[in-house]
Image (cartoon, rainbow, N blue to C red; front, side, top):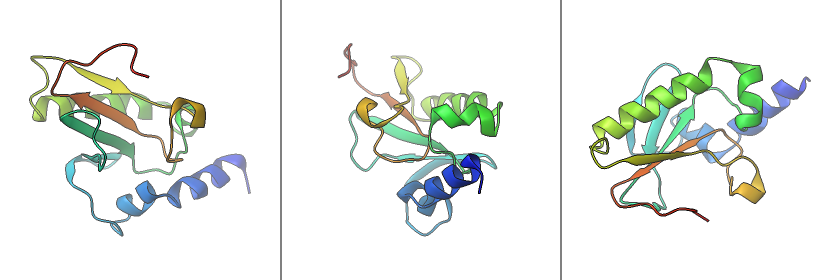
Length: 124
């Protein structure tokens, strides 16, 4: 089995893989053929939405190898979500955690769309 196949299998075994397959309910706010976006169960801001690819990709470090155009698509989806959630006027943030030390707790690539209040920097 190739490294990419192992990563896809590991990613699809996560809670996010189960959401993609419809096995676990989620409050989905956007979806298309390549990704879906749903509200975080433990929000860190008034609006906290996760954007994930349908494909099983463990993290940002594997995304360009799996599908070079996917990252742009996920960013476009994040922008659509921000517009739908009414975040464009006051501002919003996109965060991608890569690896455990950065705070990635689910081995499935995901973008955090955060807004609805003034966000401080640095975040952690």
